[in-house]
Length: 249
Ligand code: IPE
Ligand code: IPE
Ligand code: MG
Image (cartoon, rainbow, N blue to C red; front, side):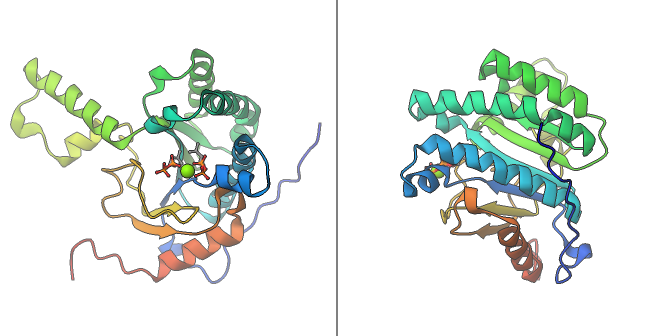
């Protein structure tokens, strides 16, 4: 067994603890291009991407970010070649199995958002296990969006609410923003303050459509496997320079 040293790093001195985003969301994009640039198969980029996510989770936890949400697989990603989809599903399963003990040690509370019922059964089993085991952990709240689509999430919330109306359990007047948010996969999780997307793409790609209403957006050209602590530091510096107005003056 190789024991990696447990290095904890504290918040860089040019960052203000008081103005840290409480919840950071990431669109982990550019794995395929990272691999292709090196003449490697795309899957090698996904493999490397896992290391990036592990490090980011650790850094967020060390620096006092309360919640991290990562986009791992979209409802549209099923349209990729079968081998790539299969590889990703197996990778998620293996990583979950391998990382559970460490997440317990570090107090990470993991949860998943998305249409989980359509994932392979063996992956669902690992997901249930990790969620159950870590659910009382006191540390960072780590949310993985898997088979997640923002539109799909909104539609399923509408259906659930409509059903309650149909059954006479809910009156139309009871439907408001907070009630609606309660029917999303992210119920109970505060909206992200900062969204980071790697690989230079300036789009949301169906991620957290409702929840990102007032998030600050940060796009870096770095490909996801290259998104390191320095890059994250830069994203937080940019965030702290923003003036969040929430529609006011
Ligand atoms: C993001 O990297 C990972 C997933 C969508 C699963 P990509 O696989 O989209 O990499 P690029 O965008 O093709 O480079
Ligand atoms: C978004 O990346 C989805 C994930 C990171 C899981 P994509 O690579 O799928 O997005 P597009 O196709 O560039 O919009
Ligand atoms: Mg991509």
